[in-house]
Length: 350
Ligand SMILES: *Cc1c(COP(=O)(O)O)cnc(C)c1O
Image 1 (cartoon, protein in one colour):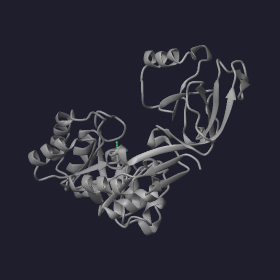
Image 2 (cartoon, rainbow, N blue to C red):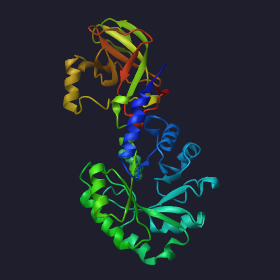
Image 3 (cartoon, protein in one colour):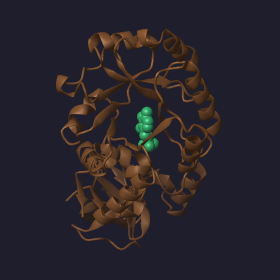
């Protein structure tokens, strides 16, 4: 028993279905730790949803999903000569992202006939070519595309729910002006309302929203993360414990739970009271400020508890004050973690 992500399968699948039905052109994104679910599971779910394209973060992730999802595979990291080339068996399914004009020649030399999208730079400034560069490729016409298959233009927008329309309209105007032989635009981080507006103002464009978080993690009530209580030791004020020989600030219990740095458990809890002032208040209220204890992501007896010392590799030591009910060894306690940064020992889909 360890750090476990338990999924209410019926509820989760219901959310996925509903989300996909409400999102025409949806391109599910499966990258990194698979948003906590693993890449393989997301690939199978994307197939079950009937998606025609799955987006992955990197070329290295392709083998994880290729056997579990039968459709096209869009790689979000822009093509560079130093990335590993996809397996030859995937050449017809992989859609590359080209973010610099010069890379197009490189890609097509490495893989004649490759499928690709051209990434246009947004206010993110992460990757992407300028409108001028896009126009350059467009004015070169078919010559620039050199036998490759242009699958559209990609935009990666910052997280600014509901405030993208002006920027996207400007970019789409650039795109239309470039005169490229494509009508498909791949976008991120637009709200449903923004997507609807764009579809009606640019009725001739096909809009493909790439979505990860809101799809996979959009119904948090379907998800529960728990850790197992591995040990509980009564502590009297002044008792020493831990790697650093700290002493207990007052009477209580040292609770050892599964989940540590190897799982991505860090000193900061993502949820709850944010900000230094609020954090200071939590610590002061608990009377542990002298110890410099920090909040853990673990909840025991209805409250978010403090680390007794920084998390270990596979377990964490928490300080439970004397007034808290002490769980039994083997009991499960709730943990609030960042799904995209946590490696679970197990994912149970019920
Ligand atoms: C991660 C990513 C997405 C999906 O982002 P979410 O916030 O998880 O929906 C879309 N596009 C690109 C380029 C990305 O890297």
